[in-house]
Length: 99
Image 1: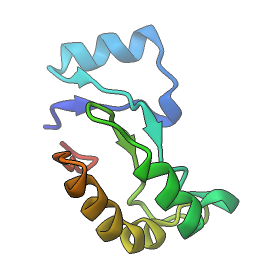
Image 2: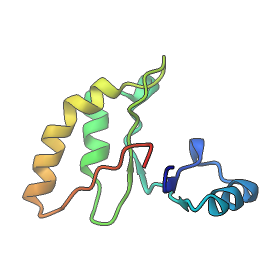
Image 3: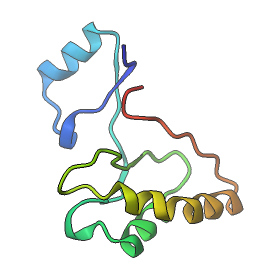
């Protein structure tokens, strides 16, 4: 069973938080979005938005394929972004959606 719960679209309702708690899940939201979907999901913008993250931030990135998400763009830019983070001394923890 997943240990973390992220409400879709970041829309949290009290009943959702209560249910997650009853299931032993910890509620997690993000502080920055890659905006890796729709017309904004282009490599240059996604890379710029992820690269701007600071220590302690949680960056929302989509891995699901649907007509709007562009996970292939995120995968393309991540190696460069991760190198920049390493150069800045930042450590990265990647959490899949099902954790």
